[in-house]
Image (cartoon, rainbow, N blue to C red; front, side, top):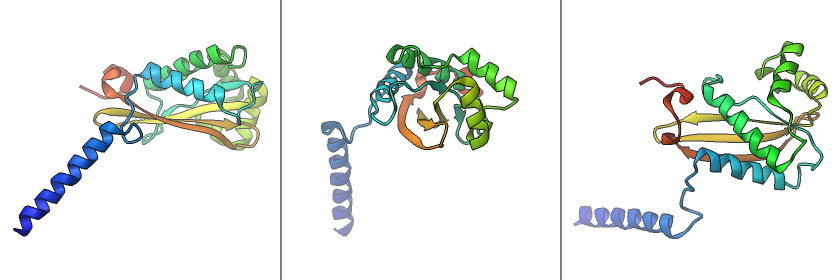
Length: 179
């Protein structure tokens, strides 16, 4: 009899969670496409009160979170987020080719941008006030992308956003996994 009540209680708990997840938007996971995730992020960055409207933005430094490696997805995220930000803040997003040129001139890598002195050197030469970067990781069904906006001068985080995108949105070569 004890086993019966335990099973019944477990079933009721699972049913409650399922109903709450579908009836209450705050409990239900929002499903994104890559485009909608980056579009929403650009909208949120543009609307963020802590981010000055006249700040120049460099989108650089996306890496896979467990290996810190730059997969093909890194460039895709940087390019697409830059494009969406340009529509929201025309004339305030640093072009990727200029970012690459500055990195070469300073002989620093994207990882070096986390060092405060190198980040400041980069900001001055690139005329950037803010750095938009992030990490991502791939699990069984989703790609989780964490995006942050950092003040180049003082290193303070001004904005953070996390999105989950269905893994099926990506080609295998972009996610850098075999078979």
